Length: 65
Image (cartoon, rainbow, N blue to C red; front, side):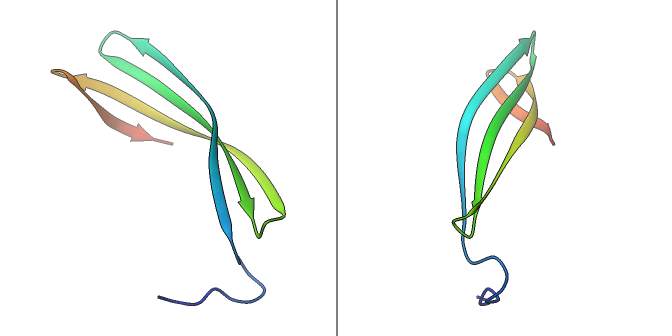
């Protein structure tokens, strides 16, 4: 394992802040709002998006953005 540089990323934490799932027949779109904490000081928020397709009884990830 490589050591993180002293002036770079010293720590990273990510937490899920909320979700929303929208269904359209056998397809769905799932949104996750995340909060990232870098070096215990810099906060950034982002959204993860998944396109889902239902095959038989199981949901499969078709795409992620």
